[in-house]
Length: 289
Image (tube, rainbow, N blue to C red):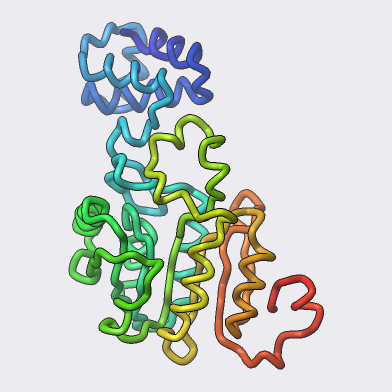
């Protein structure tokens, strides 16, 4: 298949960035770089792996899983069907963690998946250490490989636990920073998601009937494991700011919402504060300032 033939096949399958993806697939499976490809657009790349990859992509199998890796922040991550694909929206969570985590912070990343949140935070903050928690051992194995790949393996530990049950925290002690990109899609919405999302682990997407199950547990039960002055940073759905802020207020925490690079509500920043410091207007809005 030539570059143009691959572009046409992807376009017919309604792959929006067909030219960019054709380039990535050829470079990945034919072991050439983008500069060389510019001079070889008419070449017939006789590569069974490339043909298989194009066929999968035309069936809307995620490009990231086909490539086997994806870039996030300043790092590169191995990804497969055991992990949620790292997305640019989540980079806002890392940006805030890097900026707001206390010096020499002890961090825990709940629902770590590929490990991208903890790993990119540690890569930018050499003074910090972290524990990454996920339910599935096979997912943690990918995260462990990513930690080594990105040079933070000596500062990141891994734990297979169900985040919805916080008992395991008793043995870990307190943390300066709790991070999480938990499942937050309503169960009834899962079958309605874009086709490509059907290949990603459902357990990393399903946040319960109203999408808020993990926020109730993390905010309500993990807050007691924060050190004095400790912070919690949680990725949220773009329409969940009011509900998450209300959960935070009920737990005695202040909540500030940050937008992602697309202008959507994306990260909840939580700290403990006296209830008297939260105004009636904040309560009405569901957001503590």
